Length: 550
Ligand code: ADP
Image (tube, rainbow, N blue to C red):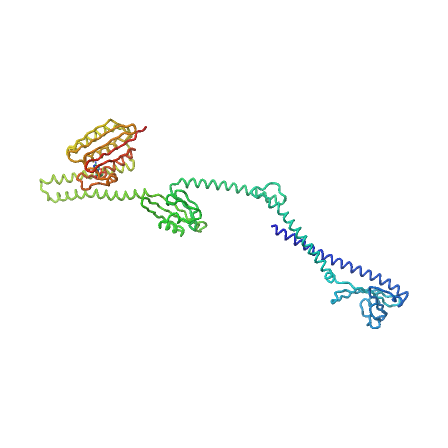
């Protein structure tokens, strides 16, 4: 801006200077021409008087700058102050002479290109009919300019320098107040009134920008609060795969340390599935991929983002589906196990029934085969009951109320139930300890204690013993079931609570493999914990612990 103002001022100054000089030269030239003409006229009239009085004698001793020519009425030159009159040609055809003979006076001017001079003639007819002509020369404008070129150049140069200095200072002075305006906070009083509307506009725009900024900041905070509280990972990328926005969950789920600005999303996770999801989304297609690692499973959902029908990036949502996948695997395993467990007794029942139907069984063997059918049917009923119990625990479908249960009383009832089985194996049952109570659902508590005592008898040696002990400590209500059975190998101890898991599949007392699963889920439902200690060949102790409410 300063440069433009400087150039404008300089151009104007120099133009004014140049035009001024030219006008001055033209005006002065015109003025001097008029002066020369009028002087020529008065000089001619003066000389004419002398010639009228003295004739040719007047010219003797006359010295004049101007050229004087005396012409006879027929045009013959009688006298010329510069040349010999006898050698001069007839002047009758000269314009000024003709005019003077005809009208008493005549004027003319002739221009010499070679000399760049203009000769002005003034002729006056005398009383005897002769004509007196006086002429004078004057330089042309350009000749004058050319003569004055050197001083003129110096003057113009000085004027240029002055104009430049003035223009520079003036432009700086003009721009300084504008530069000093604080655009972030333009004040009321400014050096130029013309800027007041502009500054008012800037002020109102600043206010609008501030308002928008506050709004944007609030939205950003809301957005961050939402995304940061999301368990799901959230990433926004542009078409160059650069991360524009992300939440902490995204980094956690992708096992990335951080997402530096302006880096590719590929640096966050190198899995092929992740790359595929991003590539698909940036090709304009929605994509879902599973990222499976040893102990976790993530689902990446990548969707393209369009703006005005042009792809502008992609949004990636990352979900932790580890549990879901584990549940899905368990469900698949469970379904396969259930089918298998149901099929075995059903095949046995069907086979035995077929033999009976075809009459291949002797009458005395019928009770034996019928007994088989009965046993397998009971096994099926037990299995179905266990599955029902487990699914109830899974879904929390118990309507029974929570009450303060007498754990010792429950244990006593259960021992009565397993009494027959214990007797058959000559297993001694004892109940010791002190009475204790736990807040629980009685039906579930009994189921848990039953499964523990049933196993303690089932997996016991002939003539062994089972001891159930209840105890109330300041921190918990405890129930332990100790047996003198076969024990559980260490490798199996962490798995015996899994559904359908059996440590020793060939053991004759083997059940459905669901008993301890019911114990585990039931305990969790009641807020209790169950643990096991065991020594192979010596026995096992299961401990059920209900935390005290206070
Ligand atoms: P099951 O119906 O086979 O008894 P459980 O879920 O109750 O199924 O038990 C799972 C496995 O744990 C059993 O198959 C058995 O191998 C082992 N087990 C459970 N309780 C005992 C115990 N008291 N002594 C030894 N092994 C046991």
